[in-house]
Length: 113
Image 1 (cartoon, one colour):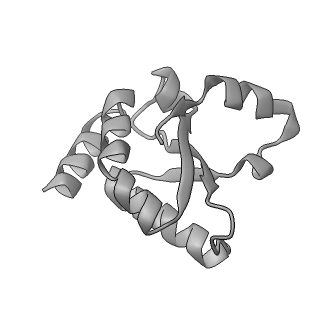
Image 2: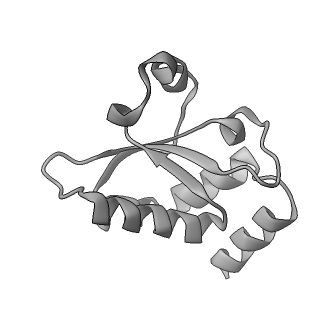
Image 3: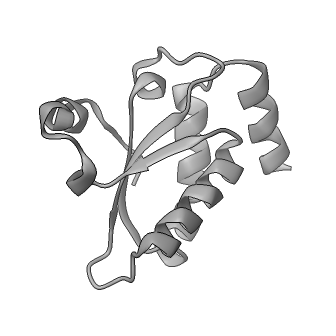
């Protein structure tokens, strides 16, 4: 039911910041237990309230130290987030942020976890 709701809202109009935050926080236990997420933050057009129907959801993730976080786990988490939100996700870690935009993203990011 929740997945259908997420897909319905995302296909018919731009993703709304509060809906995305609610969906992610609703799944906080899975993010922590299944994927070892330590922190998760929303940034970009959805966080700023400027998203369009075709906008993806930009998320900044940090994993628990010592947790296996190779490419397979990263891709699995990205796919899971896309199924929960019903739209494409751009998932990055702080280490992957380009230096010229890093400070702005960290300053504007909205904490989910």
